[in-house]
Image (tube, rainbow, N blue to C red; front, top):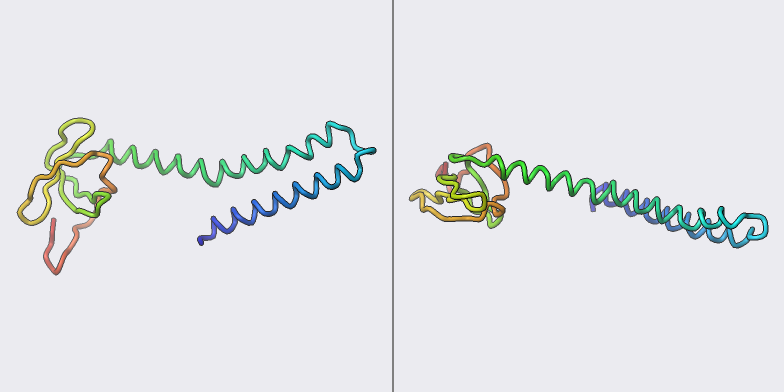
Length: 134
């Protein structure tokens, strides 16, 4: 469990306990608290929880998706890539906006892949049993 996940779990537990405490206080002092304050005390933790979930889960995922889309849009012939299946190859042709042809292995066997199947563009050459695959 990484630090961000632990922090998120801690904040969720804290928010839940604050929500329960706020509801208990609102019920205990129902005669003294206006209905609007009671309503705010009930719904404020839920709204805060949604805001926290947005900043810890939704926003980082959108940033990651944006980076992946930019990387896939910037693919060009000659790029050394790794597919989601773990195959390393060099782009030899970009057929259309959805498919690319990779040269795999020392014999440079051409294989067609969907563009979304590219995990990342490799900056360094990959070695396999002291044989350079680049």
